[in-house]
Image (tube, rainbow, N blue to C red; front, side, top):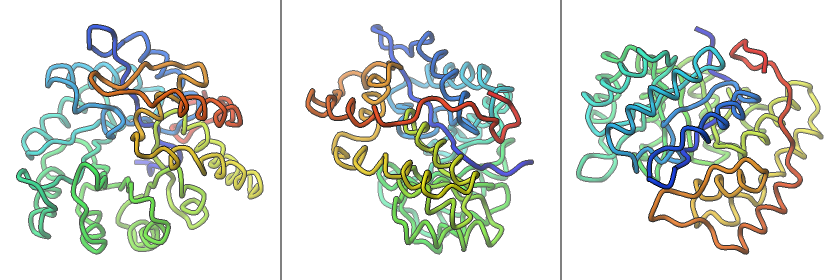
Length: 305
């Protein structure tokens, strides 16, 4: 299997007025992401709002999205669940639909708090042993466990784990992880868009992010590939303020607002949660005017877009 590298787009979920996922807007988002991303994560990241879906909605959308994307790009299917049995069930559903990887959040204990070493490694090992898909572990301290760095390295060394998406946004940790996780041969290391340039220049695999931040990620990726560091630096500076300046609203509302600003609307966050206020929307519209348009690239999936 080819290693997972480059820009991994984290699918956003648009909602229709009846509260169900909007299939028409999703089709447009598939086209958008496969135009410049090396892979797409379906219901794997917090920005996908999978936690707002019912179990039937989640499974139906997972299958539909994987089937729509397979053959066009590499597909990571979100299989995060509090129990091993449900994570494995989701992995089986996703594998049958054609996914290439299962994306698994490192979970908190069911009653809250980060699991101990034996608990976390046992959870990952049991899912890996039973999953038909290789695992991309997801470290997201806001929603899941925040293990010590050495334990994170151990989890990446479990057989069946092929990559880690780390949402820490801590450059010192990012660079250490490239050395001790990826260079050590345990798993590919993916960060976020904010430290992406540093991760790539240190030999890391890439980054995962929602659209339209993926446009900036693709520009960074392509500039590094062309050895144009000035261009890469300019691209990295495009995310200096967004999302950080308005992080209190959450990445998901900011991503949907940015998609609206570039003319690719995906609606608002799931009811009853709010979009950012008008002044923030206006600022986002100004910032995104400087962002790159869709590049024409050949992604690592081998599919020309």
